[in-house]
Length: 228
Image (cartoon, rainbow, N blue to C red; front, side):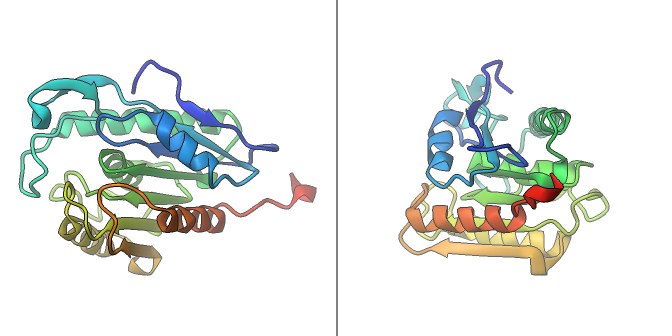
């Protein structure tokens, strides 16, 4: 993870839950922090970290914010296994930090867009931290052929909101469909929701953001103030 401090949207009152959201390739956490501010829930803290700047094979080795290297977006392409695992450990450390700050892991939703969504899925499936849910936008499941049900320990029953635009030219809609099929084999299929948006390219839309807000509020309900 980048040495830069994450972009944070603080809770409007005492934070009893958190959303950690990971941006896509070449981006920073600032744009998604702004997007999360638009759908904020008062008792939820939103944390949008920044990826480190590293060369990316896919983009002619140009240096840019990237959670791990990407060789190709072809489903059968070689993957940066060490980089993916290293990035996942950095996200697990961020979750641990929030736990130390007083928010238990089961009150944390992990999410991301594109490369960040891919990392959020991989992290949720491999961490021992029990999470409240995952929001996976316009993405894929990394290292899917090496993942098995035996790898998943704490989050076999995790709720997943996967969203994908049917007009996505970068991470094709077919990859989203293959990803949800794999997730339904590895996890409890009744806890996986796949939302699609007919004219949405590789981006977000208002309908999707409202779906994300609804999912977050369902997975992170308000705690009765009398028992806090």
